[in-house]
Image 1 (spheres, rainbow, N blue to C red):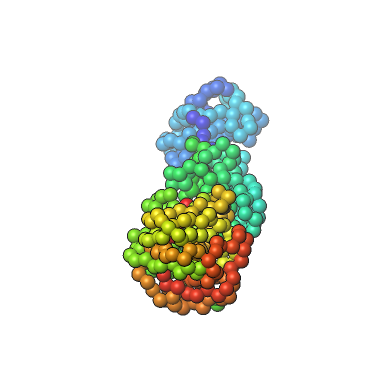
Image 2 (cartoon, rainbow, N blue to C red; image 1 turned 90 degrees about the vertical axis):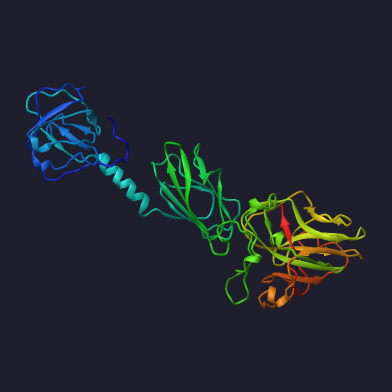
Length: 423
């Protein structure tokens, strides 16, 4: 019976070296009767197979593998069955006369042990760009260029673990090696590791599959794609909004939306948008994604009013949407100009909306809060949305800036908190 690579072997020290093969065996015999063993052979073979040498220490020595079994070594006579002949680079031979047999250590034992140690110790690697990882490597990704891919090793030994920690400011893609597939809790395909997150992958050779077996996520991302609000006041460290009314539900419940500001079920009232005053609200985007539109809920909307929406980071307009003409209420979606916009890194972004018409447009919000309460007392700064949760800036009756335009003016903190969603 052939040995499974890296299977547990059995060993014994101090076995009396006077055991011999009984009679004659051919080069293809797989049953070998042994005499001269005693209690010093202990429980050899009981918890794994073992290697032995025939004609031990003499010319034409042959090594064999003996499968695990219950052996009565103290009886002095026993038969070994299903023996694998000529292992460890030796040649199977026929033996006659006095042929000694002894348990031995082989190069297979040493190679396997050394390989396992090398995969768990001294295998720490810092990478900053696309690469194929070593078996058992603990990888720290520190690159700053988006779009990089780390490929897991091809066909490593069974149960190889690779851990990847993303210490960079951009997300990194992890792909399975060669023809292997990747399974992340039932979902097949590549994974994306966001900044400050770590993933562990384990290889199973029977299915040629890398399984995601562990994830560790930064407190800021919450590790589940939940679109909670995260603010960073200047000099005050990280603040996570813990009030559950300001956390959105997982995206599967609001398909096809990928991120949103509040659960629409919390929108219990509405506010009239002041003509020419833009409102901005923070939105947490939990992972890299491609966006096609921005949605909101309209309670009333005059046909003479036109609304414009856009996506911002702290200071710059990233994507703009075509204008929406009033008259239709309910959920409305403005399509991103140019078709789509790709988010390459998770983080805090801002949705902006401005009513450029002279007639009213009212949009859905939860209970109105004071601006200081909704923004945790943060002080807004000139020409930036940084650290605000919801704010307004008077920009006039017009569309938003062109893509790449900068935020201009000092935000006025607001407690209105409209419902916005990205698709």
